Length: 325
Ligand code: PBG
Image (cartoon, rainbow, N blue to C red; front, side, top):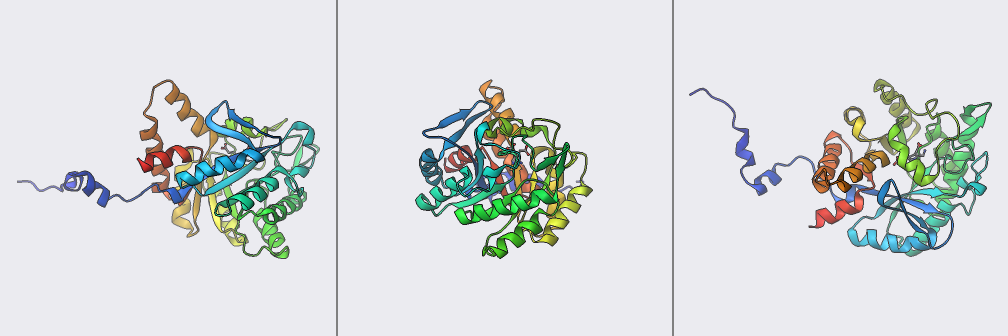
């Protein structure tokens, strides 16, 4: 008899398969994004993101109660402001009573057990919708850093547990680290969106956050989707500058990048399962074309297998329900 290796021996029973399973999606891995909107009594579903809502600060506690009951205790916050409160410099990003700062204070006062992550960027607050200051059609780097530092300090003052800069200006980790340290926030970690691609998958988010650029695109600061060595350079510089977490964004089309970073860096790795990825699944589900639960769990498991420690995902609530079943 010719000899061969019997892999199926370990697949014979469900519990045996569970015993040899290499990767798991667990509640502690999930970070839920919240869109906090100016105004009162707002709980507005985002059309391209069924099940995800823009919420005013007064409607946040009920959302947090739901998340807590599901076992999700980590949120990343985005602000949604009206056009008349936007300006060239995105001042709502760093004003003491900017919408995200208000939300952070509310969370701290009502549900202090949550780990709050503050997205640090200008695009939700600038009239032109770019992530940095604009002069003659150019996105200015170093001038933008000063504003991001101010925003990070206000976010930390308001109670952010982690600052997550998503703006893709060079030097943002150094600048924010120094700013936080000098302001007395040495203990606040930086979750750097180190490897953020210029992606079509952000479409639904820009609708949700009113943050689409009014001219041009983000290709002079976000990365070219064709590049992976450049991802290692971006991540290396953030590590040298003192990042505490590294992020890859989007997820699905970039799992090879995640795997490369996993091989190269020992830091906690975060993947952002972005809005376009969510919207595609929800649309197919609404048509009855896919098994949503099976597909979402398979995708998130793939992200873990590729090397993610944490997953920012709009599916978090659904996943928590499925894991509890
Ligand atoms: C802000 C930011 C974006 C996302 C997160 N932070 C959008 C962008 O860069 O235009 C996208 C998240 C998603 O699509 O879910 N810079």
